[in-house]
Amino acid sequence: MKNYIKYISIFSLALVACEPEFDNEVSGTPAPQSSGEADFSTYVALGNSLTAGVADQTLYIDGQQVAFPVLMAEQMKAAGGGEFTVPFMADNIGGFPGIPETDPETGDPIPNTLRFPPRLVFNASTRLPELIEGVSTTNPTTILDGPFNNMGVPGAKSFHLGFSGYGNVAGLSMGTSNPFFVRFASEATTSVLADALAQQPTFFSLWIGGNDVLSYATSGGIGKVQSNEDAMAEIPPGQDDITNPGFFNDAFNGIVDNLTTNGAKGLVINVPDVKSLPFFTTVPNNALVLDAEQAASLTGFFRAYVGVLTQGAVVQAVTQAITQAQTNGVTDPAALAQIQAQATEAAIAQASPVLSQYAFTFTPGPNRFLIKTDETLTNPIGLRQMTESELLLLSIDQTALRTQGYGSVAITPEVLAVLGKLQTAPETVTLDEGNLVVNAVRPIEDKDALDDNEISNIATATQAINAIIKTKAEEKDLAFYDANARLNVLSTTGVNVNGSVITSTLVRGGFFSLDGVHLSPRGNAVIANEMMETINAKYGSTLQPVASGTFPTVRLK
Image (cartoon, rainbow, N blue to C red):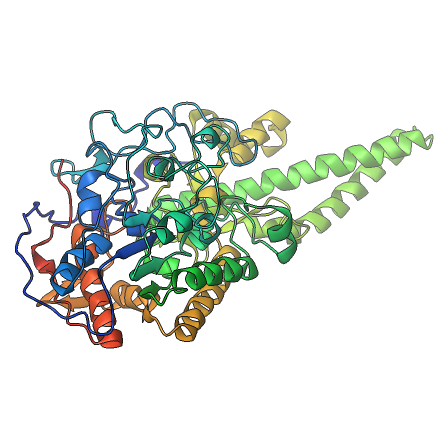
């Protein structure tokens, strides 16, 4: 059988086919504007990484300077708005050095990893993103003097905003605090909401709830969907869990009730569908591209794979039958031979209908990758091909997909030798050789994909959370920006902005930064304008748009 794996290629991604743009200075003082029924004198923005200005997978100064609240606050100044302060990072490298990722099951640090890595930049020569050179100088234990109007905290979920001690430096080692908030919390026992309320905001924006779903999605659904019992027993819930809607409802309503106690007006934003984010749509799940010979070879491999599995089932059944017969005193060779033949026939009859599902057929052109799934009575190996609707994450090892058989089969010379024996003398293949064939299959792991069940969990939670957000906005008569609907448009037809179509396509689309989740400077400018339109429509203000077309998309190396 031909070693086809080195010829397998992945579809060209948007990352490889783009025209990056250079940074441009944005300047100008807005003309006098009216605040209408709103009062912009003290604007406070609460939320997570989108509010903070995260881009290119981390928080850094240039990203913070073009976060949508900063752009809106600058326009609000012409309508009576005051200063808008930001807890800037120390540099443009971003992230925090020396804090490793932890194993989600054990909590142990993972060697050679960074929980808060530096930013990505676009290499115009390779036409791919890469980590910027250098080490961040931002120390999470260096406390800044506030207060700060931008209260966006990367990683925050809904219930984190009211969590006292979320900015406690002592909690960094235990994982109970957030290093971004530690830097600008007014004191160890405060909460994000408490520090926001202390400023007596006259106007606020609140974009929270994304991480209540997104962390489950970006981890490949390895967390759990919290029930009411989970929410009560585990506070705070696991970082990769989907927050129980009842728990979210209590947290979100509490935040809004507190912010509006003194009559402040504001803007609330809902949660986008993850399928509108390029983090989940850039790497196609049918990028196993084969020519006719490769397709035939791969199909042949899985015929041999089923043969090996069947042989294993026969060996196990015969061994058990002979052992049982000998235990019962059967010693006659002819009788034992008959028992062996009967056990073989029964094992094949029982195994074939189940194992035949692994005789995958491949065709010339695009084919879907194999994925690991739960082992069940009907799928004892826990292996199948991906469905059309299932998603691969941008964080997947794309080199392994292209050249190492990830998502299909890793053929080695040793495996090829066994396949040759299976064609000429299958009865001579040993157990260890059979295991070489079985272990050559490398399905996509759970952490790198979202299956249909996980996508359904995400969609259900997103719908429930968005219903809560909209209901509360209507109850408090607040401006409401439907980010979910807007990003769905971006991911389908795109949005025409001053004659230029902006889409969610990674890099080329212009709306998202290199991490596929957070916004580019232009993306921030586009939604800032749309949010100001929403505010104007609700409160009768006349906030003017920024020149979104002059904002950059890709940050070059």
